[in-house]
Picture 1 (cartoon, rainbow, N blue to C red):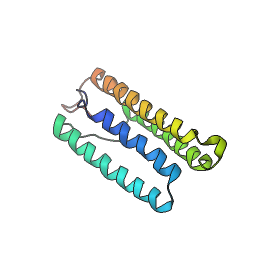
Picture 2: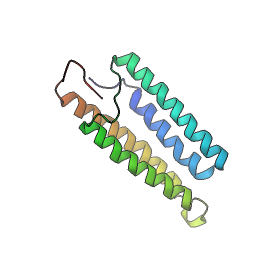
Picture 3: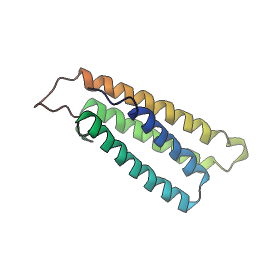
Picture 4: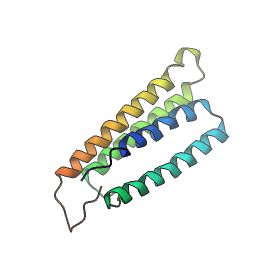
Length: 129
């Protein structure tokens, strides 16, 4: 079992779009970005379920959950750094570098968790992702 071809690129695009919105936006833009990313993430999960027949179970205690939690902490740290330093002229490149890291990292983590999920044996007829 692996994700549809569109799932990881779309997830990376959503995650990557959040960094510049947080870095360069005002409070209203930041709030809107968080709400929009949450809504689009739910839509992606719905599409994943429709395409694969598998419901994602977050926090299932599997290796893929641990990988995503660690990556989530890294993304939060990158977002925090970009919000703090974005207005310094010498650090104007940091939000864009963080965006690139989040885009590539999310793609790599997605494909890595697909591999972990495929290699794990089925338990109880359902394969949590």
